[in-house]
Length: 198
Length: 198
Image 1: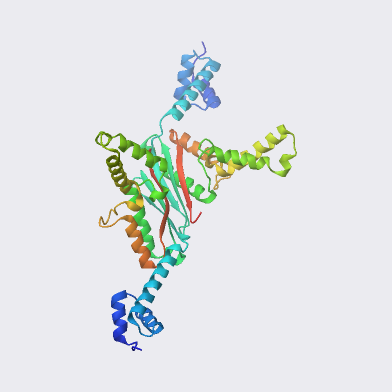
Image 2: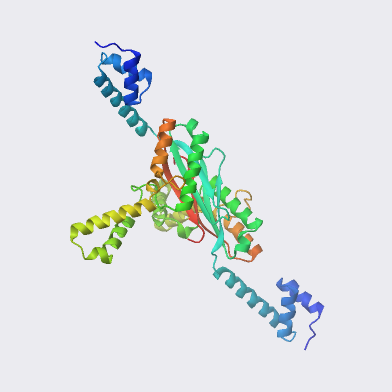
């Protein structure tokens, strides 16, 4: 049986990205078999990720943003798993960023699932009636419409929007990043956006 | 023709509450006839009130209130006719009070008209099924149900709620008072109230 020493632990760390303790444990369990230890670590990682997303996100905060002048206001609820995380500055900063994003870009729904399906169907019909679509064969039509509807979704669905302060990522990626950092699921549950007289 | 002097003007003011100029004008128009002048003033008052409520309330502000801890948040839009009134401290104070009221008492709709009619019908059905209602004759049943539904409306409809900071008036009366003071229609247009995890 190969020795579980610092060298092999470091090799496993380099390959898997797991912590020292996790690597040592996996190697000891597999009697120092490098490939088996790698499999153990991969399995544990998946279990942890599953646990994370299935864990209930029932804590969090409700936050607001009123644009100077009071003509646009946003209310947003963001959930996480523990009140501990909800009270951290990092979580609160994220929620504030989301409120600013909603105020600036005016999405109509959090995600595609919560979008009004009748609205979505209406968008499809609108595109189907466009002059450059109408003349094409059916399968080309469908592709054109789907492409345009997907583009429209990137405008109106919060999670699909480009994050205004860093166009290199979507809002969904921003939220996932924070979720990974705090080790808890984070979910934008709902928002309201009022624009004076609209 | 009776003389239009300070005495009769004061009498008319005492009875109608109208201003000196309005009273003098009404008396001059009616050749000093006290009762006719009273009628003129009453008519003008109604015309003014009608004008007030038909005038468009397209200005105003969007305001929020987050309860300490961030577990309850409110967003509210209140309209008035001019941006001048919208920017006054008195108007802003009123909107703040309304946000606090919504946070504390959790109404579900601004007024009866904007209440979900299916919900209202459901409430009626619930009351109809109550044991003390079920045995009664139809007309008594209807009266009992209507009485209880009205009471329920005073709980869930913002405008019908008792104002928490002055139980001597309803929220509707609070809003009307301010409307009278500023001489503009004031209307609570909409609100959202998020309670964490609810």
